[in-house]
Image 1: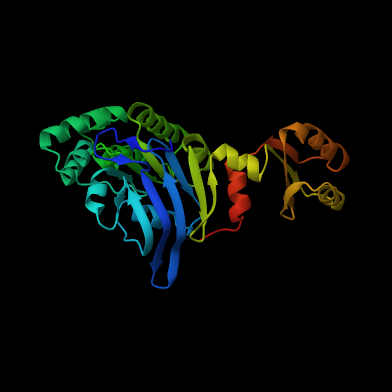
Image 2: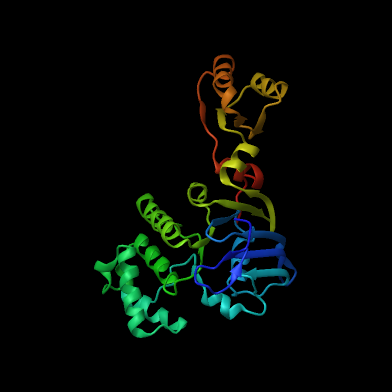
Length: 319
């Protein structure tokens, strides 16, 4: 989707839903976002990945107008964020990291009251709330207090609230953090349904690499405020780590020499050796390593986006 297209609601003609050029965000003397450039096409799910402090949240807060940009250019729906942020925010839904629901309101009221921020009438708000509660499978809990909901239910309610204004762009900041696998997959299914039926554009930040692989058409990986790589998840995996990974615990000196002599892509973590390979040579390579250098604790698995993430951003803890 490269050319200019019609907005489905006839509001404007845009080539990109989001277009950032040399975007910077500075807090006092700290550079949180350091001159990044990227574009998000209409109808796609675009991911922003990175360790803690990489600049992800600072970036998305600028996109929905919560935090002013320091320098660079940022256009959303073809509109300049510095001049048209009110129009932009009216067309954006934001699902923030925290479950910042109103504990004084019940489930249905959390949606109906929030709708008033978008000048939605009470009658319309009631209809939208009922529809969204059915969509997220919470219509049977609509009169319950929020405090009585499980973590997964609360996250689904936050998602529903972000959809109350029928947004053209949905921004999800770590939408499934802390959820059990069943709840996480429920959220994924709802997001896929929104894209397939409404063509909704989605901007996603997450620490779950499987989530990014499942949902994102394209993504960027950030660190220290800069973009390290950009592309489709499968392409990034293939380019940076190959198709398969061989993990060896307590590798011997002879194995290290073998890996170096054969110029194999690898990471030496001291107590563990991670070897990256292609499909065509993985079986032979694994068998050779297993037969000649390893008695046990050698596994062969498919390469993942998490391998790319750790290879590019490092394995040290971030506080």
